[in-house]
View 1: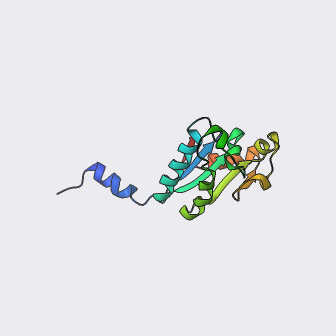
View 2: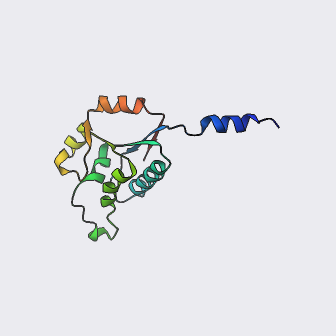
View 3: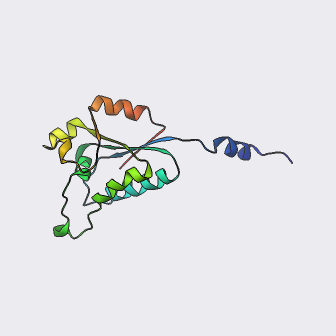
Length: 134
């Protein structure tokens, strides 16, 4: 019996690790984007992919310490970002210009990140196999 082309392609692709970057540009509440991004990141990491996260624009608010969501009656999911390390997701990048424009510093964030310039962020994105925006 001979292998079909699809079977050969599947075997060759088995075990291939792709570089995924998830780009977060939205505030953490008011839309489903931030929570959905976090869920997709955890799923991707569970499948042993090379996962990184980028936070730009209002997405930097997703990582701010001390979020209190009682007034808007939604669950604060920000502590979940601390679990990323357990999934081997350790590449978290925050755009320096986005932090500065919002009056934030690295000390305001609840997890360790690498703060990079917009130009460095562009280079990081260029080096990925897959970039998905939220």
